[in-house]
Length: 323
Image (cartoon, rainbow, N blue to C red; front, top):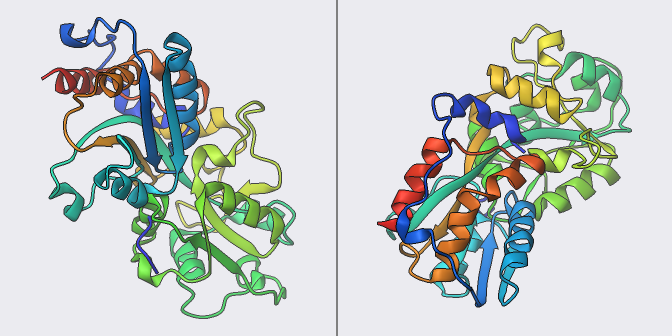
């Protein structure tokens, strides 16, 4: 099995405390002028929807600039970068040691979380909404030391076997999920699916399935409620066998944001999403696009259910870009 490993906007509010002023732009990246040519970007599924929205908005200002965005997983995006196929890789995890050895240049541009999900019509779904699952039980589901049934999860006689769904691509989300469960990627069992969209489709069509996805894929960006056909599987954080009021945070993006702000949802399931280049960007198109993302583009990130990065982190990244 190959290595793979929004949060929605408020997951990041925790980290925003103490950084309130909008970052000043370094002089060397202030004057954008006219841009033309093209930028090719590939990598993390977690970042792809936002990156496409960023690209659309940015090229409204610069119609002679073309930006192509493709999701194929963090690892594949970094490989594309090293092979010269793209100018920017999207990463949904920190760089691995072998990637750090390449001395790549990277900046955080937003934050995202990972959520366990199940089919909304599955037998026993109402029961699981009340009891949730502990981290230990979730680990058992995905590592499958023994065959688990829905009866094992719901305390019923349901003999249907659980179908765990994992990722087949080099996914940052899977790395984060494995770390939270306390296991390695090689221990994961079950059906392997490419991308978050593939994961959502599988969960919607297979009632016995349990999977995980990047948080914003679990919600309808317009309605702000959980996406049709799936349910976020609540985590029994205090292991008391029920989902208490303060653990019931998944119905909509706002309540999830509040839980993130209060530190109720596990911080281990939240991480920075990065843009990675071979060296500090010398291509003016890339440099100006990243500068815009770190400033004006943050408002769009929040609108689409991602988390705005801290202002002080944005300032540090802008300074790093101008050095």
